[in-house]
Image 1 (cartoon, rainbow, N blue to C red):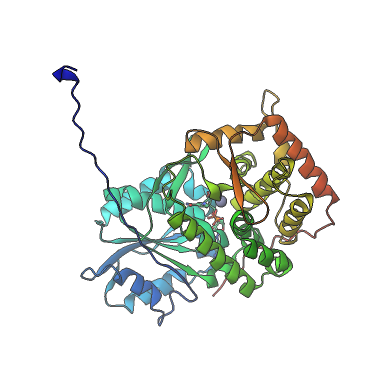
Image 2: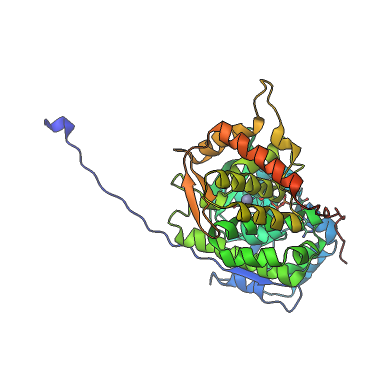
Length: 408
Ligand SMILES: NC(=O)c1ccc[n+]([C@@H]2O[C@H](COP(=O)([O-])OP(=O)(O)OC[C@H]3O[C@@H](n4cnc5c(N)ncnc54)[C@H](O)[C@@H]3O)[C@@H](O)[C@H]2O)c1
Ligand SMILES: [Zn+2]
């Protein structure tokens, strides 16, 4: 070997520790509630603790007094400083659609001269948390983010993890960052004003994690399906806390918090769900799409002999009794060239993670396996099987779509 081919290597290895609390409470902005102020004080910096607050428009519509309550709360704490009146962000998937909202928040953060030791507070559903969190994670390469999730799905999944993002290039979460929050504070009071679609939708993520990781949670969901559908708050609080615990546990102990590998076990049922959301033009919420995705992959697992017929029916029936759909006509949508549009979701899912296709399926109840191929004809057979089973299920009364309540 001549001198020119000599290689010298300095090996770099960095361990970074993240820790953040995930609180559950009620009345977060009531004057006597310590949790919000304490979450900011945890940094130990010299006060004041400067912040910008962003609120989901849907939350503001349902809680018209919220801005006033926040203002009063902050006024009552001498070490907190609200830099401008809380701003509204459009609710739902619109919050994540393209760069506009993210751009506006980044400009705001710049104009308010927030630095890395200051706080962006995001109050809302998973969509608003994703886009506000994304903006906060890129300005100055990361301003502290406090998430206050207000939907079931955001409290048990979207708001407690390490990801932010927005939809671009015709794909969900095409752009985004891995950036753990500074703190998460979930206030159960917000759930009272959710429409039934978003109340039940979040339970789909509980089914997802229960089926592949926790038999006991599945037993609870199955036994309390009707109570959950009729908005029993005690049952819901249990489901949210257990689901959050399982998600946090997975991120902490799963060995791949920033998803560098090809597997994403917590995305059971999601390859088709992401596609269904887009195909339905977001008529199906994330939770509804996930329930349908779980139903399809459950039928696929049955084909592979990973679960038995009784368990397959039990899963479908429990989700239906909870008020979740297991079927939507969008499953049959065709592309211009006549092929099943749904099937493109498989390749899009693979591409998002990179590397080999890796799909998680249940193995029995509470355990899982990974598979690396899903031949299209087998997916279509599972789809046909799902349709037959769904039609044979006893008629489950649909959960009526009530409009969200408005609190004073
Ligand atoms: N970052 C992650 O790790 C992660 C994980 C799972 C899902 N997600 C994302 O989360 C999003 C879905 O979030 P979601 O299910 O929370 O729905 P959402 O954020 O889309 O909100 C749904 C609707 O509920 C309204 N709303 C929110 N809170 C309310 C309240 N308390 N009362 C009345 N109305 C209220 C919103 O304005 C909106 O109209 C998807 O974009 C999904 O991709 C992200
Ligand atoms: Zn999900």
